[in-house]
Each structure stands twice: as C-alpha cells, then as structure tokens.
Length: 305
Image 1 (cartoon, rainbow, N blue to C red):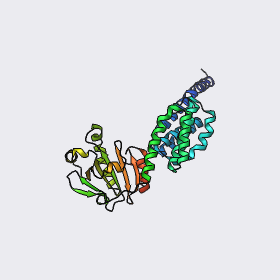
Image 2: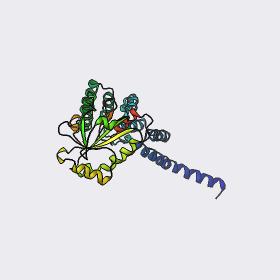
Image 3: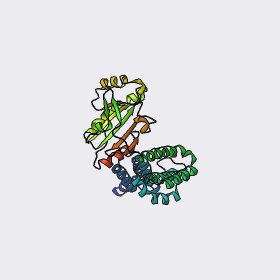
Image 4: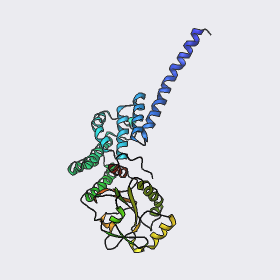
C-alpha cells in the first residue's frame, strides 16, 4: 500500500470516529450537569457543557434544578430572563431533569419565582406564582405545597422573638434557661428529638457531630427531648449512652418550647440569634440551614454532618 493511500485510510477512519467521539464528550458533559455538589462544580460543568455544544435549554435547566435544590435564590433570580427565553424552544430530549413538556418547564419557572418572592417576603407575588405554577402543571402541586408549608412557618417565625428567660430542665432534672445556654455565643441551635421513634433516636449521632462542629464556630447547640410525659429518664439514659457533653434538655409541659417554635415534625433544628430572632426552623439537612448559618458566619466552611 502506498504511503498516500495509507494516509487516506487513516484520515477516513478518523472521520468515522469523530461523531462517536463527539457523542461521548457530550454525554460526559451532560452527566456532569446532573449532580454538582457546589456552585463552583456547577459552573465547571456548565463550561464543559458549552464546550461540548449542549443546548442552552439543557444548561439553563441544569442550573435551575441546582438553584432549586440548594435554595440559591440569588442564582435563581439571575436565571429567570434566560429561562423565559429558552422555554420558547423547549425540547423534552434536551431536558436533564427528564421534563416531558413545556408546561412542566414553565411550572418550574414559577417555582423559581415563588422561591425568590418568599426570600423577598412578597406574599402577593408568592401566592401568584404558586397558583400559576399549579395551574400550568397540576402534577407538581405537591412540590408547591411543600414550599407553601415552609413559607407559612417562616412567616410565623418572623413575628416571634424568643424569651431567653424561658425555664427549661436538663435531662438530669437541673433547671436552666435559654439565656444560660446562649451565654456569650453567636447563636443558639435547638435540635428536637423523640425517644419514641427509632428514626429520631438514630439522628442523635448527627446531632453530636453538628454540635461539635458548631461549637468551634461560636454557636452553642442543645438537644431537646419532646416527650415530656416520659420524664427525664429516657433522655438522660441516651445522654449517658452516647457520652453527650453539650446541653441535653427535656420539654416542659407548662411552658412548651416545642409549641412555641411550632415543632410539628422531626428531625427539627431551630437556630436562634442573640436577639431572639428565628434564623431557621426546619430539617437540619435542608439547604436553608446552611444558608442561615452563613448569615451569621459569611466565611463558614462546608457544614459537617
């Protein structure tokens, strides 16, 4: 075979391989967009997706999903103009979230707007976006319902100032107050648990880890057993079993901190400022918890769990 013919064969083989190589690059870039764990990782994935030639819709939707999952309202607000542009040419095959219709995509845009309105405490705008989102795609009603529950709780907490003189008992039966617990620290975190459910008790190791992490940052954590009728025995037994060194409290029937803070589900963490304001009330695994901590500690490293 002549040298020229050999070169032609090699070139032809490379041409045939190019579409497959491009497809592999695009598939890899697509998967990188699906589950980024940080904003920097997301932006790196976005850069790779653009270089691979993925569509604007794919990239914008991936950023939308990340913003919703992390409750990054700043990111969501900046995305809205682009989302409204790409919805015009929505294609299900380009959806990283598996969306099947443009109506579903429009519903998620309403969700992003509702989250932004909630952050801005604009109840009229929040209600309007929830109504429109459910109307556009009723199958997403549960998603909006959870957002409404969180909004209503946050609104209730925004009008509350905690009385630090409120009496409490430790699991040993010793009297204390929220003021005693807070001392000179930057904030107080109350973590509620129940001795009646395995799921609640199994969350105690995470509480211990969080308490140690936050202590180093100047935030005191305290566990609160909500089963007042059980007395101190169950809580104290568990404290000894896990060698818990941070404040370990039991609920009071007379002045219920559980009732005051509207603790209706577990796990539940409530972050209270030095001024008695509620900075967060929800599941400690919720992204909003980390966001609330960063309002106290802007340079806080990643939250240990």
